[in-house]
Length: 232
Image: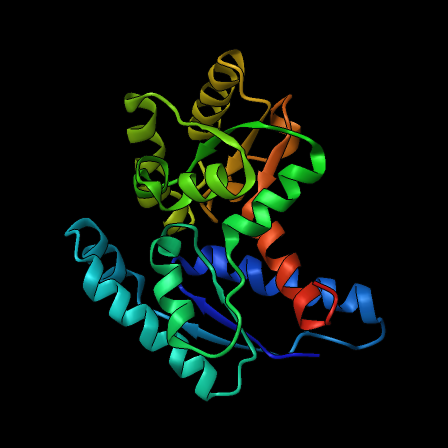
């Protein structure tokens, strides 16, 4: 079993899900008392969030590279960035280490392709929804057409992520807002929805909507385990 290096804490609410899913899956695959060999570098999200909203992406890239290098130095054999938004600098991080980086968009795209879907809605932070680093990868590498919500809905989603979900706050009203947004996207042709923020699955699940949901936290964690066990 390879050692998984996790860059977490963005937020710790979703990072704890990564830890749970990874260990649960290893136990299911190997049985007995098996659990995952992993190293978690958990950051102070207050500092990261501040830099994000100040558009200090060069500094964030420097920090993410530093985190990845520390994990490699500690013995990690593959890197998992436990957040969709911070894949904005995934290529720079990957180029800074000699071990593989498990890209969350690639993992998600593979799951979408397996389902035979072509037109997907993307929900996430405003950075993930509005910038190209995520959408372009899906479109150019996997021929997946990406829809995003309206400007008003994007703001609502971003606010719920940062001001509720990252703080562990789950509101029924926010769940209903997400369901309404997803329904509108389905009417506009979305065949499924990418939960492109690792906190969103804390709020909404497949039983809440009619079209397929792609839980990026679960998909990403599972691919990391496959790779750690030499099967991915």
